[in-house]
Amino acid sequence: MPFTLPALPFAPDALEPHIDSLTMQIHHGKHHQAYVDNLNKAIAGTPNENKSLEDLVKVAGTISPAVRNNGGGHWNHSFFWETLAPKAGGAPSGKIADAINSTFSSFDGFKEKFANAGMTRFGSGWAWLLLKDGKLEISSTPNQDNPLMDVAEAKGTPILGVDVWEHAYYLKYQNRRADYLAAFWNVVNWNKVAERFGASSK
Ligand code: MN
Image (cartoon, rainbow, N blue to C red):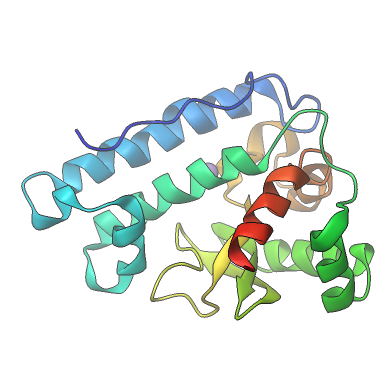
């Protein structure tokens, strides 16, 4: 099978109390694993079997819903785990901080707009900070779509994303998506976001 579940880059309880251990175990071990398994099933014996995940995601509009949804799920969750870290959060620094401040007036202004993208995504989906033509933009996508996809309303290179599916927060926060999004700022791996920003803005 071509695709495998990447290991979490931290222990499941490392993001407590902001994201609880049981949520992390189920989210990674069950939900993400299911996207990987179902993606492998959907591509088995087809020409898509030999393509990279990035190549599949880029042509989401021309592949089957099973490959689009599970390929997106695999890409998004792999990206999301790297976006999180224990003893992280707070405000970014350096070039990414400058870009956020100049684009959104302030870090608080950015956080408000990003959280709003997550809050107004009806049903399941993701909120994103992406780079498009060298400029930062905030967007959201439904289901397991992402800004790399040809079908995305706002296309670009994602550098920060948050999962707003209920499975990402329901055990601890129940229906309180706003509380989960507020807690998210305590576990953002800004070093990784800055690295993605640097790699994409060259
Ligand atoms: Mn998820």
